[in-house]
Image 1 (cartoon, rainbow, N blue to C red):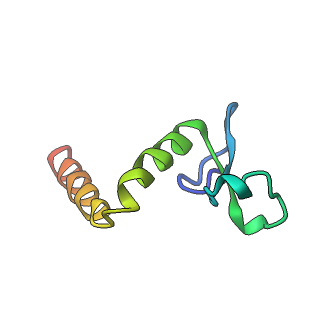
Image 2: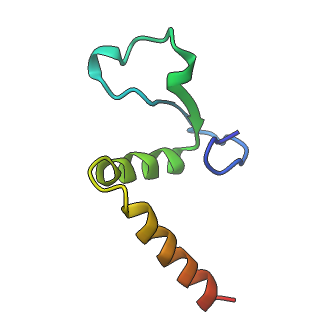
Length: 74
């Protein structure tokens, strides 16, 4: 299952390495550092992380936008 969407893993899914330290990238000993993500989810997580690491409020702005879209599209 994709950790974020809870949907079935599709062709092209990734085992996402949560520890982004290049020195640790080949360290496979800590299972807590890995999650399964579908390809598009993986791309979104990496895109969002670039902003989130310096601006945690991006999640609130994103949630607000999505809530507005849900309301408009009822």
